[in-house]
Image 1: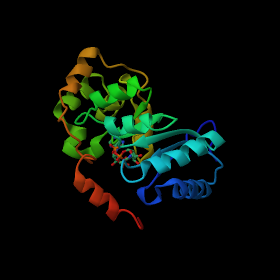
Image 2: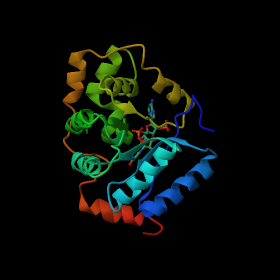
Image 3: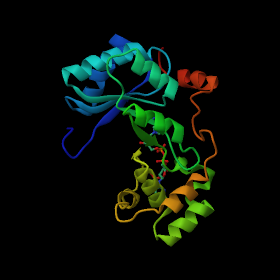
Image 4: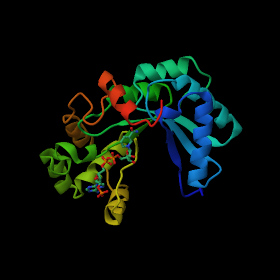
Length: 220
Ligand SMILES: NC(=O)c1ccc[n+]([C@@H]2O[C@H](COP(=O)([O-])OP(=O)(O)OC[C@H]3O[C@@H](n4cnc5c(N)ncnc54)[C@H](OP(=O)(O)O)[C@@H]3O)[C@@H](O)[C@H]2O)c1
């Protein structure tokens, strides 16, 4: 199924961590997706046996059934741990990134280590009145673009890989129409003032997060 026009990514969930479980989970995903390879496979959460999983993913990468391997929700320290004690470094770290949680320091660390920063929740999942936020609405009116387009452009100009989610065909088209304008440096800096200094949706440094993740596993 995967082809030149589709970049196919999936993630490994916590209950399948560890060398053998990861291999099994990977092949189950191939079966469900009706494909014989993945473009990108990510460790979804930065807890439990991430090294065992990473070794399995390194082997699958060497066999050629995954084109790139990466992680999601890893802090810089967790990335350093993975890089230091393994042979292959992650190519991608997918993290919550939007105007209220901008990830500048994390992005700098990833850039130094040639890890692409991939965003999740570019629109903060609509939280904090994202789509009507006054500063963003003013910029949107001026360009003229939608708030969603302003933020996708802001992320692209920061070299952040962006994966907006929409089930609405019109919005999907809108979200692609971001290559016909550029934000000025000054407007980029204005958006930087919206930073709140902490995640809005999922704080992976919070011990409570681990308890929550366990509730999302059918077996551990
Ligand atoms: N790695 C992780 O731990 C993690 C966690 C959460 C999410 N993700 C992934 O990140 C991706 C995106 O994140 P997300 O879905 O959480 O949040 P998001 O992209 O910030 O927000 C999605 C919401 O925005 C709406 N939307 C999309 N385009 C719009 C537009 N142009 N104008 C107005 N509303 C618009 C969507 O509604 P409609 O669908 O009705 O258009 C949806 O309700 C998803 O693929 C998700 O799987 C990863």
